Length: 276
Image (cartoon, rainbow, N blue to C red; front, top):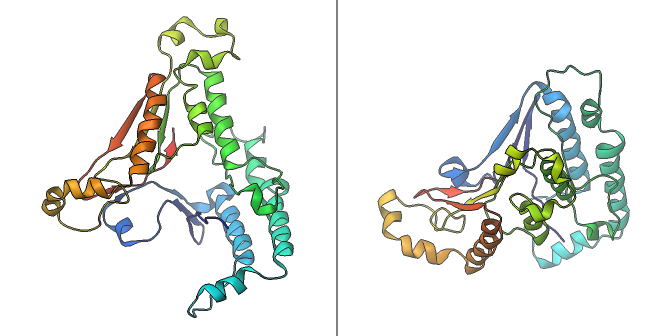
């Protein structure tokens, strides 16, 4: 069991990567991030089209009939389940590892030197899904951690800004984030390699998340005046667990000299996720 969370929309040679669940609020009052790649996106559009085809071929096709517990059990208890997983595993390996033309462009020394950014697709799946077998390429988590550590090593004065709708950061992510602003965590970097000015302007972590009135669990609908009148009910609707998570994360982040900011806008919900 798991959660399918990919949101990709492809039309002709254009790709939109989004956080949208296509619910009503996404078209009216949700703050989120969307990235559009046009004219093939340097191979990204074709790559994501292939990824969608692979995942679709593995997926169970819904025939429009009513689904109950019994039919769900029969759908997910097929005898060829392990064979299908092995086929999926091999297809993902071929796409991300063996036939990844996107990475070929990244490492191409003959490519034009006017490239200002690289867009590198990543993939995250639990090892338990493939019965403990790891895919032969870095997961999204591994790629993210590697990027953050590399930034700190190259430029200790750099700051990091992370946005997350729900601040349920893992201990591993908190540990990596707090490298910023914490010189004790830079023991692997020779201090004589850091310029004096870099020491004086040491980078820190900044984290942005949804506030109590702009949380995704807040009641939907209502005018600005109506929402303003039920602020206390809105706050009470946010699960206590998420408030606790924000407080716990804030203790670690602020101890490194950083800040935890909460987005508030009456009548709107916040769902943006990213690292800068």
